[in-house]
Length: 317
Image 1 (cartoon, rainbow, N blue to C red):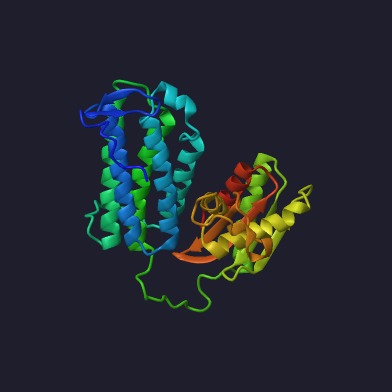
Image 2: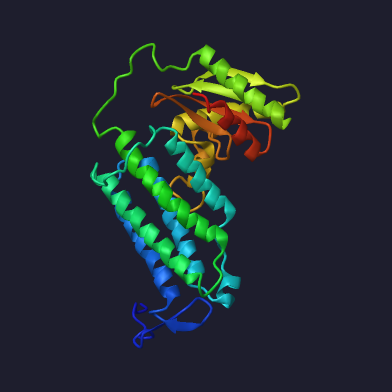
């Protein structure tokens, strides 16, 4: 069994990926050390959070922070060998999660004291750790170029942790607190489904993309399906399944796709439910007055177009 200690750092130096030796007091070591500290803080918060979807999201983020740390701990030779780097799609993913969680929150009208709950407090600790890491990385920029996507990712991450700290207090119900649904209110009706589809069609026509749009209720049952002229027949089932998937898992199919990647919490989920699970964008849950009432699925364009069309439909709810 190999020993964890090497004695190579006994003189205050450490090795970068690529072979370069530098002082442990350098800005670079401080930067990737602060990322490690932030990752640990997120891990503590994850242990405290009851919402399994938020925990899964934090697991994805922790894995991405290993990628951030890897970049910061690599010299030029090491950067050439890295198999993963933070990309624009990673930043966009955080932004979409922020937007999705924010859509369920009321407007913020005052400063927040981070003591509303234990879960929220730990998320605030993680948020401040990420902010510290961001400052150290910016400080490192004085000496070397840092890729813009890496900086943007760290910046968005602290924003996401702030939104999560609000979400666990203002949206996630306390454990054991069952909210009774008042019959006849906040349900997916045919009229509401038609309104949502009409908004989707306007965006699809604007993009000049023929799509199929499906709306399901809170039981995953199909309420309405609209196939535009020239939309692919194969898009019918995909559209229905996107809506079903979003309703079944209470999140976007794009986000589920991230969670289903190898090594992630829901790897292989697309092989369940008799093949009805879709793990690429275009399916969105529909929330009304803080309640999940159904979902929309759009198929026929590119993944990005399907997402835009679905998002447009829900803007006015």
